[in-house]
Length: 199
Image 1: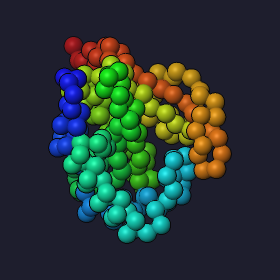
Image 2: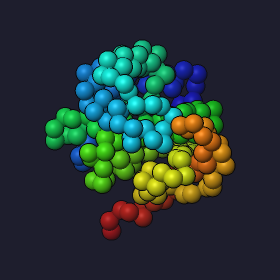
Image 3: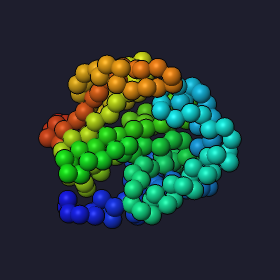
Image 4: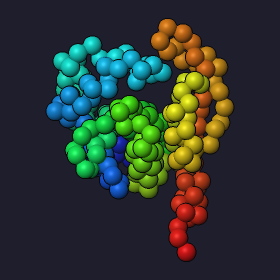
């Protein structure tokens, strides 16, 4: 599984992931209106490393750039799409991968109009399933700025464990911020799946 080039080969044609309410698929340039709808919002990017998109053309150019990254097998993020309407409401996937250590970092962004409905947790659960079952990773972690309580709740809901705070670890929006770190290990993930199975 961990032979040279396997990661690029896997993500050159990033597979669709499905849940009860969502489809996770490759991002497309045609997603620009839906992405711009939330990426222009300063509240969405408040705790993130990137700034609000200034206009929809910026969003289109970004999505166009990602197509090359997909073709090279160097982009590991999915569009989160509602099955019921086909609307793209955010992204979820791997922000960093370290195949030699069988370890990855996950990240997610959601349109605030769809908060409070469990969509991020549902999408992240699908990505964890892919990480541990298909990719056979040993560890997946997630990070958030200390004040980002809503992001932290998502990590907790999918079974991640709090590891600690990295003090002044990232420079976000003009200041050094403390970063909370959560993780889940392969064994923990499958143990939790066993416990949740009906008898």
